[in-house]
Length: 221
Image (cartoon, rainbow, N blue to C red; front, top):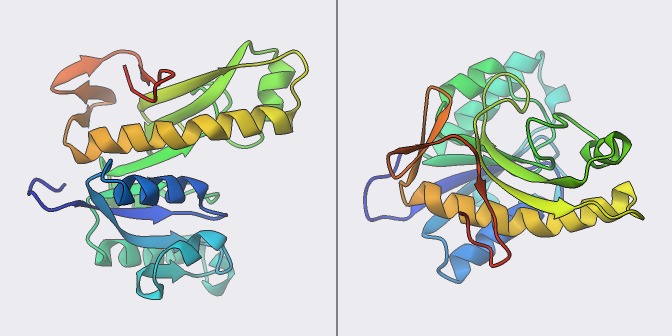
């Protein structure tokens, strides 16, 4: 982890359009985030997210090019390690990371997930929230562990579920909260204020027993 005065180096894993990556780039450009995007990595060679950084900071390979899932994970991990990241952010990365990858970057690997974890791990979270009759839905930023969406949750943003919501309308409102949530969380991480010890989040050396919550001003409390 970066302990110098130099900007923290962030590697981003993305499979899609890269809207969460863009929020980090915007935060850097506006001096809200003291970091640099050291590389963008994808399992989709045509992912629009890749175009957001110069060619020398892109890596994309289709998993089908490799003989096995571990072989792809090893190539991805080696490419990520080569850019010397302080943090690795999964931002819309739709492929499950293997245990070897997760262990290699243990304590430096985070993910943003569109649900209020531990509710609705995995896919189709918005439809599942509606099917469950949830009054609230939202997004979570958590440390990545080998078990799917099971790592310690750092922070969450909540939205009210409206009576006329569809999965699409709910997804659009959650996405609007994901961007400030991710930016505010990464700000704390690169400032060295957040760590994780034995599954418990530490903020400024004090244990948190519930996730930080994003308020209407975009501040975590």
